[in-house]
Length: 238
Image (cartoon, rainbow, N blue to C red; front, side):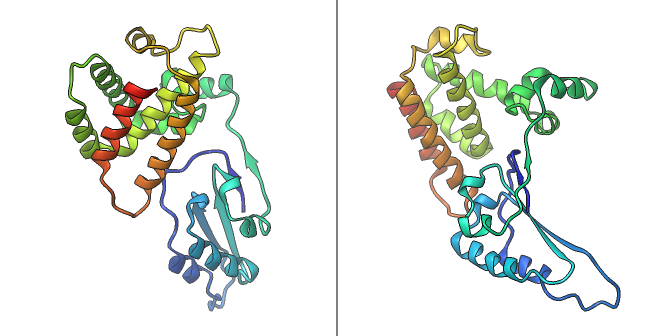
Protein backbone atom coordinates (compact mmCIF):
# COMPACT_ATOMS: atom_id res chain seq x y z
CA UNK A 1 0.00 0.00 0.00
CA UNK A 2 1.12 3.55 -0.54
CA UNK A 3 -0.23 6.86 0.62
CA UNK A 4 -0.21 9.71 -1.85
CA UNK A 5 -0.44 13.39 -0.97
CA UNK A 6 -2.34 14.01 -4.21
CA UNK A 7 -6.11 14.24 -4.07
CA UNK A 8 -8.13 11.90 -6.28
CA UNK A 9 -11.71 12.71 -7.25
CA UNK A 10 -12.84 9.13 -7.68
CA UNK A 11 -15.38 6.87 -6.05
CA UNK A 12 -14.31 4.01 -3.86
CA UNK A 13 -13.86 0.67 -5.59
CA UNK A 14 -16.70 -1.80 -5.11
CA UNK A 15 -15.86 -4.47 -2.60
CA UNK A 16 -17.21 -7.17 -4.87
CA UNK A 17 -14.84 -6.07 -7.62
CA UNK A 18 -11.88 -6.17 -5.27
CA UNK A 19 -12.88 -9.59 -4.02
CA UNK A 20 -12.95 -10.84 -7.62
CA UNK A 21 -9.43 -9.55 -8.22
CA UNK A 22 -8.22 -11.26 -5.07
CA UNK A 23 -9.43 -14.74 -6.07
CA UNK A 24 -6.76 -17.45 -6.37
CA UNK A 25 -4.96 -17.55 -9.70
CA UNK A 26 -5.82 -20.63 -11.74
CA UNK A 27 -3.61 -20.05 -14.79
CA UNK A 28 -0.64 -22.29 -15.60
CA UNK A 29 1.67 -19.27 -15.87
CA UNK A 30 2.54 -16.79 -13.15
CA UNK A 31 0.42 -13.63 -13.37
CA UNK A 32 1.05 -10.59 -11.22
CA UNK A 33 -2.22 -8.91 -10.34
CA UNK A 34 -2.54 -5.42 -8.90
CA UNK A 35 -5.58 -3.96 -7.15
CA UNK A 36 -5.49 -0.14 -7.00
CA UNK A 37 -7.95 1.67 -4.71
CA UNK A 38 -8.06 5.46 -5.03
CA UNK A 39 -9.54 7.71 -2.35
CA UNK A 40 -9.31 5.02 0.32
CA UNK A 41 -10.40 7.45 3.03
CA UNK A 42 -13.90 7.28 1.54
CA UNK A 43 -14.27 3.55 2.10
CA UNK A 44 -17.33 2.77 4.16
CA UNK A 45 -16.95 0.69 7.31
CA UNK A 46 -18.37 -2.41 5.63
CA UNK A 47 -16.12 -1.99 2.61
CA UNK A 48 -13.11 -1.44 4.86
CA UNK A 49 -13.86 -4.58 6.84
CA UNK A 50 -14.19 -6.63 3.66
CA UNK A 51 -10.90 -5.23 2.40
CA UNK A 52 -9.26 -5.97 5.74
CA UNK A 53 -10.04 -9.66 5.39
CA UNK A 54 -8.36 -9.72 1.97
CA UNK A 55 -5.31 -7.93 3.30
CA UNK A 56 -4.72 -10.66 5.84
CA UNK A 57 -4.59 -13.29 3.06
CA UNK A 58 -4.13 -11.43 -0.24
CA UNK A 59 -3.41 -14.51 -2.31
CA UNK A 60 -0.30 -15.40 -4.22
CA UNK A 61 1.04 -12.86 -6.77
CA UNK A 62 -1.64 -10.34 -5.78
CA UNK A 63 -0.75 -6.81 -4.69
CA UNK A 64 -2.96 -4.12 -3.20
CA UNK A 65 -2.18 -0.41 -3.55
CA UNK A 66 -4.14 2.12 -1.54
CA UNK A 67 -3.92 5.80 -2.43
CA UNK A 68 -5.20 8.61 -0.23
CA UNK A 69 -4.56 12.27 0.44
CA UNK A 70 -5.87 11.86 4.00
CA UNK A 71 -4.17 8.85 5.67
CA UNK A 72 -5.50 9.88 9.08
CA UNK A 73 -9.04 9.18 7.82
CA UNK A 74 -8.28 5.61 6.72
CA UNK A 75 -9.42 2.87 9.08
CA UNK A 76 -6.62 2.25 11.62
CA UNK A 77 -6.91 -1.51 11.18
CA UNK A 78 -6.13 -1.08 7.48
CA UNK A 79 -3.27 1.34 8.11
CA UNK A 80 -1.65 -1.12 10.52
CA UNK A 81 -1.34 -3.63 7.67
CA UNK A 82 0.17 -1.15 5.23
CA UNK A 83 3.65 -0.24 4.18
CA UNK A 84 3.43 3.55 4.03
CA UNK A 85 5.18 5.54 1.30
CA UNK A 86 4.68 9.28 1.02
CA UNK A 87 4.77 11.21 -2.25
CA UNK A 88 4.75 14.96 -1.52
CA UNK A 89 4.17 17.49 -4.26
CA UNK A 90 7.39 18.86 -5.81
CA UNK A 91 8.83 22.26 -4.96
CA UNK A 92 6.97 25.14 -6.61
CA UNK A 93 9.99 26.14 -8.70
CA UNK A 94 10.33 22.60 -10.04
CA UNK A 95 6.61 22.38 -10.75
CA UNK A 96 6.59 25.71 -12.59
CA UNK A 97 9.59 24.70 -14.69
CA UNK A 98 7.84 21.51 -15.75
CA UNK A 99 4.51 23.25 -16.41
CA UNK A 100 6.26 25.85 -18.56
CA UNK A 101 6.96 23.17 -21.14
CA UNK A 102 3.31 22.13 -20.97
CA UNK A 103 2.18 25.75 -21.52
CA UNK A 104 0.22 25.74 -18.26
CA UNK A 105 -0.16 29.15 -16.52
CA UNK A 106 1.04 29.62 -12.94
CA UNK A 107 -2.49 30.45 -11.78
CA UNK A 108 -3.52 26.84 -12.37
CA UNK A 109 -0.71 25.56 -10.17
CA UNK A 110 -2.05 27.77 -7.39
CA UNK A 111 -5.56 26.46 -7.97
CA UNK A 112 -4.19 22.90 -7.88
CA UNK A 113 -2.56 23.55 -4.49
CA UNK A 114 0.93 23.05 -5.91
CA UNK A 115 0.23 19.73 -7.65
CA UNK A 116 1.55 20.01 -11.25
CA UNK A 117 -0.30 17.00 -12.67
CA UNK A 118 -3.58 18.31 -11.29
CA UNK A 119 -2.80 21.73 -12.78
CA UNK A 120 -2.31 20.11 -16.18
CA UNK A 121 -5.59 18.22 -15.80
CA UNK A 122 -7.39 21.44 -14.85
CA UNK A 123 -6.21 23.13 -18.02
CA UNK A 124 -7.54 20.28 -20.16
CA UNK A 125 -10.98 20.58 -18.54
CA UNK A 126 -11.32 24.31 -19.18
CA UNK A 127 -10.92 25.18 -15.52
CA UNK A 128 -9.83 28.78 -16.11
CA UNK A 129 -13.10 29.69 -17.83
CA UNK A 130 -15.14 28.09 -15.05
CA UNK A 131 -13.01 29.80 -12.41
CA UNK A 132 -13.57 33.19 -13.97
CA UNK A 133 -17.30 32.47 -14.14
CA UNK A 134 -17.35 31.62 -10.44
CA UNK A 135 -15.55 34.85 -9.51
CA UNK A 136 -17.97 36.87 -11.66
CA UNK A 137 -20.98 35.16 -10.06
CA UNK A 138 -19.60 35.65 -6.57
CA UNK A 139 -19.00 39.35 -7.15
CA UNK A 140 -22.50 39.67 -8.60
CA UNK A 141 -23.99 37.98 -5.53
CA UNK A 142 -22.07 40.19 -3.10
CA UNK A 143 -23.09 43.35 -4.99
CA UNK A 144 -26.71 42.21 -5.27
CA UNK A 145 -26.64 42.17 -9.07
CA UNK A 146 -27.86 38.56 -9.32
CA UNK A 147 -30.30 36.52 -7.28
CA UNK A 148 -28.78 33.84 -5.05
CA UNK A 149 -31.65 31.56 -6.00
CA UNK A 150 -30.84 31.91 -9.71
CA UNK A 151 -27.11 31.44 -9.18
CA UNK A 152 -27.58 28.44 -6.89
CA UNK A 153 -29.90 26.76 -9.37
CA UNK A 154 -27.41 27.29 -12.20
CA UNK A 155 -24.43 25.91 -10.28
CA UNK A 156 -26.42 22.95 -8.94
CA UNK A 157 -27.26 21.95 -12.52
CA UNK A 158 -23.84 22.70 -13.96
CA UNK A 159 -21.32 21.45 -11.41
CA UNK A 160 -22.06 21.52 -7.68
CA UNK A 161 -18.75 19.91 -6.78
CA UNK A 162 -16.84 22.58 -8.71
CA UNK A 163 -18.74 25.29 -6.81
CA UNK A 164 -17.67 23.74 -3.50
CA UNK A 165 -14.06 23.50 -4.68
CA UNK A 166 -14.15 27.15 -5.74
CA UNK A 167 -15.59 28.22 -2.40
CA UNK A 168 -12.88 26.24 -0.60
CA UNK A 169 -10.30 28.06 -2.71
CA UNK A 170 -11.88 31.41 -1.89
CA UNK A 171 -12.12 30.77 1.85
CA UNK A 172 -8.51 29.53 1.97
CA UNK A 173 -7.26 32.72 0.33
CA UNK A 174 -9.45 34.90 2.53
CA UNK A 175 -7.91 33.28 5.60
CA UNK A 176 -4.47 33.79 4.11
CA UNK A 177 -5.23 37.46 3.46
CA UNK A 178 -5.82 38.03 7.19
CA UNK A 179 -2.27 37.00 8.14
CA UNK A 180 -0.23 38.54 5.33
CA UNK A 181 0.14 41.93 3.70
CA UNK A 182 0.69 40.38 0.28
CA UNK A 183 -2.01 41.36 -2.20
CA UNK A 184 -4.21 38.32 -2.88
CA UNK A 185 -5.05 37.10 -6.36
CA UNK A 186 -8.69 38.16 -5.91
CA UNK A 187 -8.20 41.78 -4.80
CA UNK A 188 -11.39 42.73 -6.65
CA UNK A 189 -13.42 40.63 -4.22
CA UNK A 190 -11.90 42.23 -1.14
CA UNK A 191 -12.75 45.65 -2.50
CA UNK A 192 -16.46 44.85 -2.30
CA UNK A 193 -16.42 42.22 0.48
CA UNK A 194 -15.89 43.31 4.08
CA UNK A 195 -13.05 41.94 6.18
CA UNK A 196 -14.25 38.44 7.20
CA UNK A 197 -14.17 36.88 10.64
CA UNK A 198 -11.37 34.30 10.77
CA UNK A 199 -13.23 32.03 13.19
CA UNK A 200 -16.31 32.02 10.96
CA UNK A 201 -14.16 31.35 7.90
CA UNK A 202 -12.69 28.24 9.52
CA UNK A 203 -16.19 27.09 10.49
CA UNK A 204 -17.40 27.71 6.95
CA UNK A 205 -14.43 25.76 5.58
CA UNK A 206 -15.43 22.73 7.68
CA UNK A 207 -19.04 23.01 6.45
CA UNK A 208 -17.82 23.07 2.83
CA UNK A 209 -15.76 19.93 3.43
CA UNK A 210 -18.86 18.17 4.74
CA UNK A 211 -20.84 19.26 1.68
CA UNK A 212 -18.12 18.01 -0.64
CA UNK A 213 -18.27 14.62 1.04
CA UNK A 214 -22.06 14.52 0.60
CA UNK A 215 -21.80 15.37 -3.10
CA UNK A 216 -19.28 12.57 -3.64
CA UNK A 217 -21.43 10.04 -1.80
CA UNK A 218 -24.18 8.08 -3.57
CA UNK A 219 -26.80 9.53 -1.19
CA UNK A 220 -29.12 12.00 -2.90
CA UNK A 221 -29.87 15.38 -1.31
CA UNK A 222 -31.12 18.82 -2.30
CA UNK A 223 -27.97 20.24 -3.88
CA UNK A 224 -29.52 23.55 -4.91
CA UNK A 225 -30.88 24.26 -1.44
CA UNK A 226 -27.53 23.40 0.12
CA UNK A 227 -25.64 25.75 -2.23
CA UNK A 228 -28.16 28.54 -1.67
CA UNK A 229 -27.99 28.13 2.11
CA UNK A 230 -24.18 28.09 2.23
CA UNK A 231 -23.89 30.98 -0.20
CA UNK A 232 -26.27 33.09 1.88
CA UNK A 233 -24.47 32.16 5.10
CA UNK A 234 -21.13 33.15 3.62
CA UNK A 235 -22.29 36.55 2.40
CA UNK A 236 -24.25 37.58 5.47
CA UNK A 237 -22.62 35.73 8.38
CA UNK A 238 -18.88 35.42 7.65
